Length: 206
Image (tube, rainbow, N blue to C red):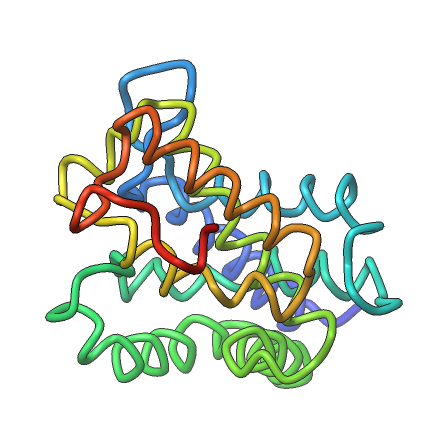
């Protein structure tokens, strides 16, 4: 056993405990509190186990799980950037790359490279596994908002068109899940949880 390697690994494991304190904008469905990023990652991994048969292509489930468990670790330093905040998203890439460099470098070099590669794959969406992982990452907040009466959307005055634009990436990983996501958005508009700019349903939703 290499004591130094083990110590590096333990240091990293303790460091990622901080992800439990990073709050997202979405609310959990059974309480009046924000979801944290560690809960989000766990929930997405479980979603992958359940929804894998809706992927457009034959994909490696274990690889999808790796992507989902790693994809938000950088938020320990970079924070959770609200996807609809145009100001915050301007420097998001810089903040997140700096975070990835620091956090993953806590690991032994071989594992640091592996973790960084997984994070970059998720961000680039250039594999079937990454496209499906991103689809789940988009779908979960839709479910949260639908089942909390659009609480997060309404707090930030988010419109239907913004939600459609943001979540269209679901279609890259799963046509079935995109169809389902559109039904969620339409239901949210119908119930008044989400506002359509002109009070109507977009052509994309008909």
